[in-house]
Structure formats: structure tokens, C-alpha cells
Image 1 (cartoon, one colour):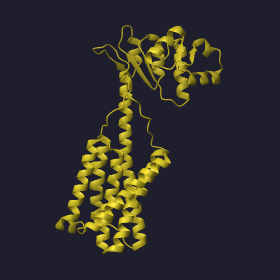
Image 2 (image 1 turned 135 degrees about the vertical axis):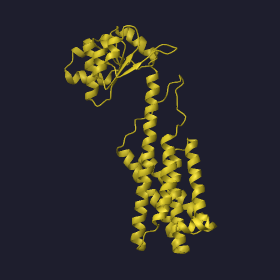
Image 3 (image 1 turned 30 degrees about the horizontal axis):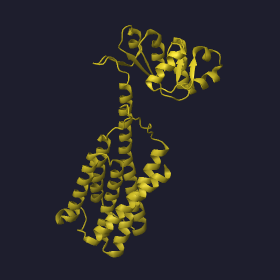
Image 4 (image 1 turned 30 degrees about the vertical axis):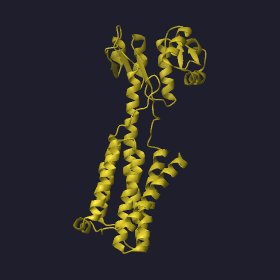
Length: 324
């Protein structure tokens, strides 16, 4: 919170808003420090009092130099420069707020209860939640495809030919990429809130090291589930039966991991269940099964598929917890 009011007033308002006020910095404190000291104080303080429009610009600029994405909210002409400097400038539609609104990227208008800045928290929570869902959907697609490639390469090296055919790959992509991945991206779980009703902000998800680790885990465990079913199928039956078991486990392991990611969403449960039904229909319907290069499976084969799927899914959960 940045205000021109007295520090005592600023602390009282901060307490009402639930803003920690352990460190309150004033404009005089900022002027008394060199650039490094000023930057350290700005990084540490949560409430700024007795500041001028110039100080507000300095505070915003210092936060940006430290790598923060800064949004500045204000309703007066003394906020306009800082609003313009911030990454996201937000103006409040209030009396005397023309300068702030003209400098802003986003304007909060009046509602039944007046101008309510708390809607920004809900918007931020929704934005982070949406990006998390998109990130999870990308992980489903990339990690699953990585597992398919890994399994195919290793299976070809061991047997001299691809363990599943082209039409079977079509079934894999149809049942794992189309419905489940889209369901993860579109799903909306129940938002967590505090006792006061404010949304709980999720940690900002990035496409960095954590994402790459999750993709690697998903790919490895997908290949593990499919490879286990394929190897057990080769030792207990014919080649085409083993290929069908590998196809079922390849799809099942990906669906299991997708369900782990989106277990709170009814849409994800529905699409995963639908994919399993379609998979069983493709494998167990004679004419369709032959078209896709499969053979109907018996109870023992389905048991091996279920066990391999559970192995791959459980391994993914365990690895994610270890690497978190």
C-alpha cells in the first residue's frame, strides 16, 4: 500500500485491509538512502506512507528492476505517473480520477457497492487458475507423446519392429489427446477461499524446470506402463495380442495420469471414462478390432493391462512427489 497519509494512519488502514505492516517506509526514508539501500527497503516494505508522486514512480520502477510484474491501482492525479509506469495500470472510476483513468490500462467502474478493488484479487486468481489448467493440458499432450515415442523406439530396438502400428497410434491420439487434454484445459475446479471469502492465489505456474520434470515423469511412466504390458504379453501369448495389450496400457497409463491431474473436475472424469469405453469397444468389437490391428483380449490380458496401467500411474505420482 502506498499513500501520502501519516504512517499511523497508513498502519491502521493496512490492518483493516489485512496487509502486513511490519515494515513501514516513508518518503523521507527513501530519500535518505542510496540506490541500493532504497531498493532493499522497497523490496522489504509492504506499506509506504508520506510519499510523493515521484516516490510512487521510484517504488514501481525499483520493483520492476527486481523482476516483479507490477500493477498499480490509483484514483487520483498523484497516482497517474506511477500507473503509467507500472506493467499494468489500474484506475478507479471515482470523483477526480480523470488523470488516473487516462493513464490506466484497466479501469474499475462502479457497481452496486461502489468501486471494489477486491475484484482484482478474484481476477488474478482466475487468471492463474486458467494458466495452470492450460499448462497441465500442455503437459498431458507433450508428456504423453514423449512416452509414446520412447516406448516405440525401445520396443523397435528390442523386437526389430514397431510394437504398435500406425492405425493404433491414431486410436492413442484420439482417446488421450482430444477429449481428456481438452477437458483438463476447460475444467474449472472449486476455488479455495479464505475465511473472509477472498480467493486463495495459486503459485504462478511457469513453463520452466518444474514443467519439464513433469513432462519427463509423464513420458517415462507412460513408457513404463506400456512396456510392462507389452513384455508380459510377448511372454504369455502371440505378437498381435501383445501389441493390443501394449496399446491398451499405453492409453490407460496416460488416462490414469490425466485423472490424477484433473481429479477434481467432473468433466475430466467423464472424458476419461468415455475414452476407456471407446478403447474397450475398439479392442473387443471383432470388425473394428481387426481394422485397427488388434485382437480381443481375455480376462488374463485385461488383468495385465490393468496392473501395468496402475504401475505406470502410481510411479508417476510417486516420482512427482519425490521431485517436487
